[in-house]
Amino acid sequence: MTATRSTRQRDVIARVITQAAGPLAVSEVLAQARADLPTLGLATVYRTLKLLTEQHRIHPVILDGETLYEASGRGHHHHFSCTVCGRVFTLHTCPVALPSGTVYPGGFVVEAHEVTLYGRCPQCASQAGQPLSG
Image 1 (cartoon, rainbow, N blue to C red):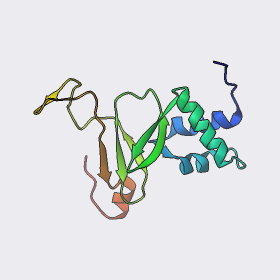
Image 2 (cartoon, helix red, strand yellow):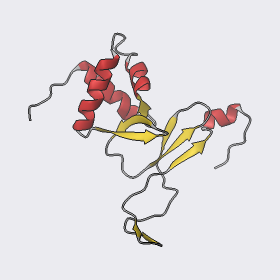
Image 3 (cartoon, rainbow, N blue to C red):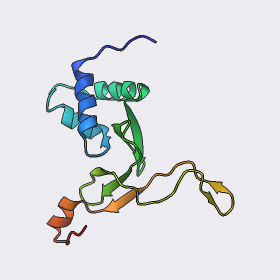
Image 4 (cartoon, helix red, strand yellow):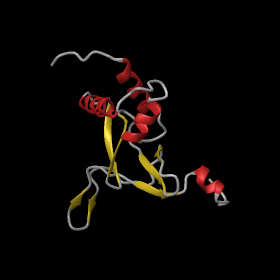
């Protein structure tokens, strides 16, 4: 395997994903990266996402049939999808105590789990006058 050289485009795209509060859609990566690179093209974003995925620096997350991308190495976590603004956030706590190896009735052996919670993010909840607790 040949070494892959670092480019400004790759560095900016990797930084955008690494600094995100949750997984990002391709369009979000493009929009945020264009703050530093106004002429950045969509094809370059797709190529870079593919390369970063192959290098295991990022990984895809499928939510509601859409592929989003987030940095690898963040450990066990889940996601919250805002039904108002559409943003997706990383939750650093697990709402499910479900260790690997758990056997459910019928012989289902758990190897891993993914949880996505849906609702209103703090910003959208406060704009709707919904009380926040927690």
